[in-house]
Length: 64
Image 1 (cartoon, one colour):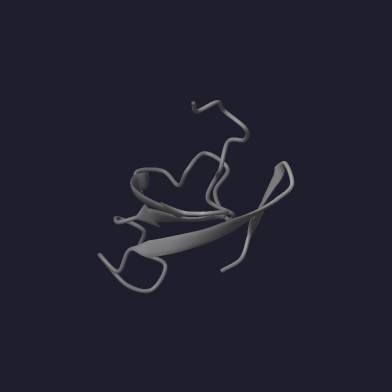
Image 2 (tube, one colour):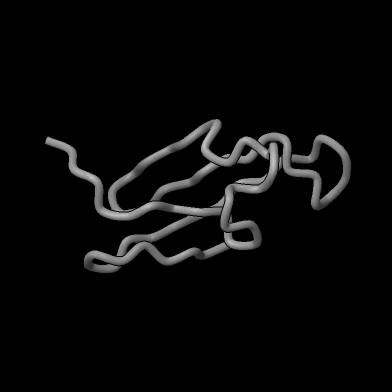
């Protein structure tokens, strides 16, 4: 079964980025997770972002 291990947050915005919808899409493969923030506008209006996290033991490390 599943159990909570950690809370993943957008690296530049601990609150998930005011209205950026961090977590609006998620892909999991083995020890890697990609979290989407489709309203993030760091690279222009409506550009969106994807955040890659890799699990190392019990810790999730932001990669990109």
